[in-house]
Length: 377
Image (cartoon, rainbow, N blue to C red; front, side):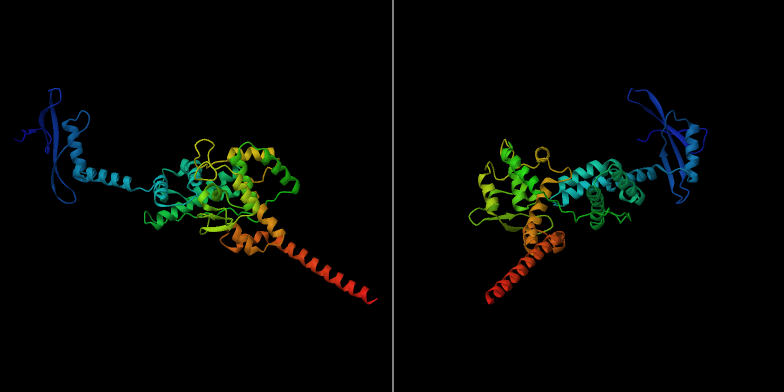
């Protein structure tokens, strides 16, 4: 049965008597008015601290004029806001979805870049709220901290890749953020002098961590990438045929490369402690990080400060082949480059080898002519 209405001195304001949780009687106020736009007759409860008939009448007047929404409109607004919050694509939510839906091989490095450089400032922002100016500030901040251009480029490329991923999947419209990527000098070729190479090999021969030593030796004699070596399994190696199967290399399709006698010897002498070639010293699980060992190796061998040991040895392997007359197409195949353009950095070394070969041919011809002239005398 409906509770009794009690009038107040204000038309359109009444109250009903109820009891609270302690059994104490309380007055609950209600207002009656017509919606200013639809003309709908509305009766609703008014709540608030220490509600009085006068306060209820003020609220009624505001709602009757359309200056304050009805309770139903307030509920709908809260529901819409809640739905919008659930559907909002913050950069953090975008990253989580990206990780779930993609299968990139370098997610570990991407995660580090996102956590360190993108999340602190942009993680809770909607892509639509991020401006070009903010991205320029991010780049300037990274450069001011003297990060390498390659690091800055990786961070900005990850941000751009996330935005394109969201737009491509219809999560949101293109926010129109524009920024320039730093220019890189990718033509640098890292090589070792004969003395540096000898020092490195002497250190490797005595190095206690056989896993780290084997990794460096294999890089020197095959030019394989770090990621390729760390994913290498024993069943990827054909010891009898002298080939190794490279799984899902960077930027290309899986393929095989031949192993030199030196590389085969390195693998033959390397301990087999699990499915993977390079494993943890305890447990034989795949080893994913050699940073500390490589840093100590580099210092012990007294290599240049800017020499990136695994990547540098890959360069050294390629440049040594080019200097000794191996053609660029063969070098491209051995390194697993997806296009000839990536191998062109070694062209000057290959040209020098060709010039030396041409000079040898010319000298041989001169010697033949001189020999014929002496015979005629």
